[in-house]
Length: 277
Length: 126
Image 1 (cartoon, helix red, strand yellow):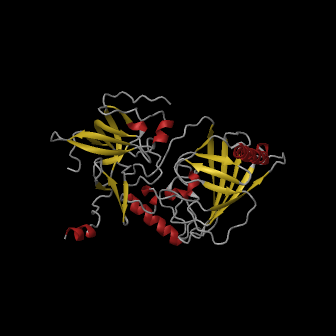
Image 2 (cartoon, helix red, strand yellow):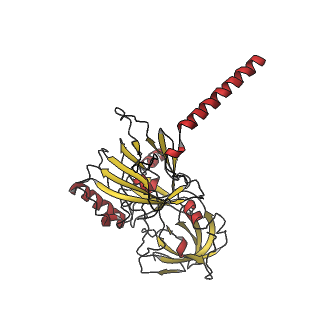
Image 3 (cartoon, chains in turn yellow, green):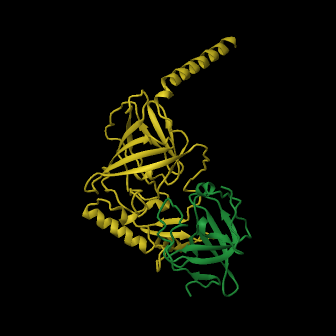
C-alpha cells in the first residue's frame, strides 16, 4: 500500500515539474498583452471603411461579379443569395475575422488560439512548422504564424499569419460577396496593438483568391473590453431560418414553416405523398 | 388584406439606426418598409443565435395572431443592458418592425425601436 502511494506521489511530482517547466518555457514578458474581450469597431461588412454590398467595390472578376449580382437580386426578393450562414453554416476564413460577436486570444509559444463567441476557434501554429502535405480542408483553414519583434525591445509586437486549405462555400459578408468555389484562398494577416492605444487591436487582412482580380487588403479594428461578460451563442439552439433545397423559409411562432419570399411555393413534399399511399 | 391586423401602419422610411447586427443576411425582412405593430408579449425567447419576441396581435375580427419577431443575439442584448427578464409575458409593446417580405406574420425587431404600448421606454441597465 505504501509502495503504491509512493508511486502516486512520484507521478504527481513529475507532472508538477513538467507543468513548471512548461510555464517557464512560456515567458509571458516576451508576448504582447492581448487579454480580455475584443469587439469589432465597425459594421458587419467586410471592409469596414466602405458600405456593405456593392459599396465594398470588391475587385471581383466578371464571372464572380455576376455571381454577386445574382446574390443581391435574390436577397432583394427575400432570399438569402449566396449567404448560407442563415442556417448556421460555418462562415470560415476570412469572414471569421469580421468578428460579428466578440473574440478572445489565448497565446502560448507554440500556438495561438482565437476563440469566437459564435464560431469554432482558429488555431494559429507558431512552432516553426511547415505546411502539411494535403491536409483535409476546414472552414477556418490551416494557419501558420510568426511572432515578430518590430521595435527591437525584446518583446513580440506583431503576429503575422498565413492561412490556407479552406473549405467552402464561403463569402466575405452576408450580402453573398463570394470567394472562389475552388477554395484556393490564401489569407495573410498582420495583427498588432495600436501604438497609442493598447486597447485597440488591428488586423490587416489580405485575401488572395481566384474570384478576385488582385489581392484585396482591408484593416479590421477591435476594441478591448477588460471586464467582459461572455455568453453562449450556439446557433443550433433556436434558429428559425430553415433551408430546404435552394429555398429558405421562416418558422412561425407555433413552429410551422412560413414563406420568406413573396409568392414563395411550399417545399416539395413528394416523399411525404409517397409514404401516405 | 395582406395584413388583417388592427394596428398596422406603414412607415415609409429606410430602417438603419435600429437595425439588428445579424450573423447572417436579414434580407428576408423588408428593411425599406417597416411597420408599426402593437401587441402583448406571449414569450420572450432569450435564445441563440437570435432572441425572439412572440407577440399576440389583435386582428380586426377580434381574434389574435401570433407574430414571430427576431431580434439581437442574447449576448448583444446583454451588452445593451438587456436580460432574459427585461420582457415578461403580458407586457404590452409597441414596436417598429421589419416584416417578412412574404407577408407572413414574422419580422425583425431592434432595441432602439421597441417601447411599451403606453409610450414608456423599456428600462435597461447597461
